Length: 352
Ligand SMILES: *[C@@H]1O[C@H](CO)[C@@H](O)[C@H](O)[C@H]1NC(C)=O
Ligand SMILES: *[C@@H]1O[C@H](CO)[C@@H](O)[C@H](O)[C@H]1NC(C)=O
Image (cartoon, rainbow, N blue to C red; front, side, top):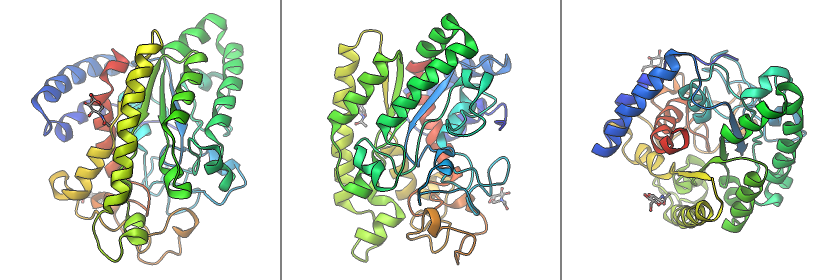
């Protein structure tokens, strides 16, 4: 899969509306990125992804699970215009991030046939839809638990040594960016999440050699179309209780990350806040060029995801560009682009 080129400059318009400091950072960042991308040199050796459906690029295609997205209309706006297992009409925020980092391919799903040979040396995607920090979350839908994703990462390291040699492998492992994006499924499926699980996870990843780790916050769970339908008591607005739960977890995530960064020497860690950017898209869609934030594109747009969002779903929109959400739980490609631009600005310390 090829990523499209020269999108580094595209970050200016969407992010310049934020604060003055970030605007200055943006300009610098764009200059740095332009330099690297123009020289066809990614900013880091590799990009590794762990987590759930928000970042799964096709691992669940290879599992015996109901939670899949490898059929139309998923993927209809993707580079290949075909389903890949991504829970989106097009690219995920991590796909845009891979492009922003200067990669010309996306990290392949670890269980796919693409994850072999030289392709391993620029990173791999271990994420699995319906997974979470809590092992039971994944078990419920036969997804790959986060701890199993870590086991796969260990197995990967051995393969990498064979492909790249010991010293090259070591520099890939320590220089790459690791993104953990999980937590929503724990809430949606189990209503359970414990920041200690996250802390232990990060420590394990650190122990295996990762040094540049980004972790995404929880999104405004109460604003997901399916959440409003299920828990909104007939209203059409974000469910306050779910948003409060997300905010409360995010604050703990922040404190925990700061403590880890102090405790583990050489660790460079960033909490990517996706709560605020997504909340802004939902509450002020027109500020960002969106027209629909309550209803998702697929089907009725109020609930459907995975097998319920399929070719026979009645009501699927013709063009998802103006929609914040693609299905009942997942942002559209257009929203992912906005989120990825924000991640880039927030993550500058990981690449400098
Ligand atoms: C985390 O803490 C930093 C610094 O204290 C703050 O700028 C940021 O907004 C916080 N992020 C979240 C998700 O709470
Ligand atoms: C969707 O709409 C946008 C702008 O509104 C347009 O640029 C794009 O080409 C349309 N996509 C399709 C597949 O029609």
